[in-house]
Image (cartoon, rainbow, N blue to C red; front, side, top):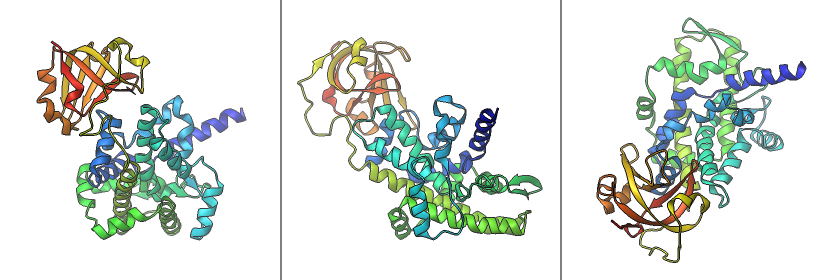
Length: 373
């Protein structure tokens, strides 16, 4: 019976510890998108496909009901006692091991840049990083354990019952009455010098900043359990700054991680003709290999949001043998490929990757595609 109670208790904690809410996480992602390098943008397009950063930003919170991800709850926060110096804080965090937000960020940064990670692992790693950088900037996620990150501290705000964690998660944000796009436009006013400074700080410093804010929030809550408009006016500025810093630092993190990213083929480099020929129906047996295959283009579509073109080879989606992905900057080489190549039998040369259980080839050179008939 005790075992079941413990499991239920941890499930409740996992549900309550949701940082920033969807609006806050999406705002952080939107700000980050504004500060990405072209190389980072290309890499993110490859990994996320039809999705974008703002869409996947809340993903890690949405996993709490997925049994495959039941062990991820502890990755969203850090429990530390109050009153620590930076050196004590850093030592305490490192001594806790990897099962917290700091350890999770290190883990997924390594997975994202590893040559042995599968495309699916890299995609999940990117989604977790987008989320956890945001979590690190929510003060109540770097706090003490005895009140579950402020969830046990009951407050009255705007005439409604809430708690300290929820107030900082979404209560203050929601009172503004803006969506994430409006918030990103309003918040993203950082100077170049601030961007440089914020991006040079380490994740340990990000968390320590949140930790110091948490200490003052606990003191305020002890003095007054009914935050008023003055409290809102003073603290919404701090919320805005933490979200802005989260977005700028997320961009800096991704720019660094994707510095060495290269697509399937570098521009200007001839296609390697020493390839094996594989029937399109057998491509799933050749992940990671550069192959030549022939197949009919059954359908295709141009995705306006990320300017990518997808061609379905050997059948219509979701029954295609292969998906050919042409990025925005390479589309001009083919005109409107979803129109001009539809119904044609084409030869494709490229490296086969596994994208969500389906073979995919990323095309960056016109020489990779040849019309057979």
